[in-house]
Length: 294
Length: 220
Image (tube, rainbow over all chains, first blue to last red; front, side, top):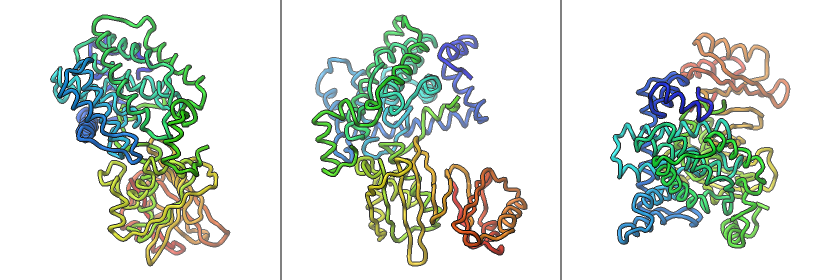
């Protein structure tokens, strides 16, 4: 089993196979399942992601009324105007938002790596798909590549907002997406690692401060920015830009930052945006004046 | 290493918005349903801790009712569960409790019909996982991740042996087992988690044994 990113890249390079292939082979070995079974299970997860994006782009609303409908606004804007940031980037943003809006509206999603960060990986996948026209198998492989990098983070740092802040949750998701984009676009395993490092470096320190403790504000828009960060980082890595700090050291830095982060910024709704006057007002509106959160 | 399968990272598939407040809550409701064995006519649900303070935003109430209707955590009917339950004439009541529970995400579920009722306490421990910690006043620990039977029996010698002998005869291996009683010589509860699924015929045979009062099956 690979323990870190450098081992993962080495395994791929030595055998001259892709990161996704390393992950598929390891999964078969660890779970003693056939290739067909492992690929089939991921195919089902991919279908769930497709359905969530589809539903989100039709427009949904959460129970609290805090989120929903932004994916539709962005798609309409893209149809009527020429977006400044480019079609692919904004398409990824809208599809990431769509996924998290569906999650907030009690829809069915696939955690990647968590429910709160479920938008980055599918958002980027379904946007990049329009440009690269991948086969179904390549799309499934995108998820294995994401999973390989996610597993390294989960085993060496954390993928939970309660443990490491938003950097660990949306930061990890964005890094996973960046690495997978690189592979789908024909980049090398090392370039995947560079893309992940560049993404994660720009997510370091991000706190988890959900308003009223709900997976809505700012989680939905954080996924939007995670998706855009992933695409830009992937392009940089594909251009040959490397991270001066190796990927594994960035992950370690993220872990250490998470450990020293005050609990007020770890999903407790005690600090950051949750503690703003508007954040508090929303909280009171949802739970009534007899809030027991304090 | 904590995470060994890629599907721990890309997965699970579940209802949003929160794995612990929604998916885990649905699992608690579904375990109650499985133990009761049929659709209840009424449900009284007490919410504690973070469940009590945030259930409206996370849909914890919707999820528990969905579980009681036997919906899985990725059932698309989940968000309509309260409406469906009302249409089926199930009386529902939610109570926000002030007491501080041992675990922040705790629910006490009372369900029943004209014949029977059942009361259990469930906790949602993260990532959509849940455990039952109390059933009809008995302390226990049940994850719902393995096939399991709960055997209500008289607290007498030989009662446990009679059950394990039957399981052995059908080549069913016990992975985890615990016994608890409220009082010596009265009713007691056996919780048996097994590796293999337990057929209904085995349950019928178990119930025929002396000192065995009732057997309920839980499986995922």
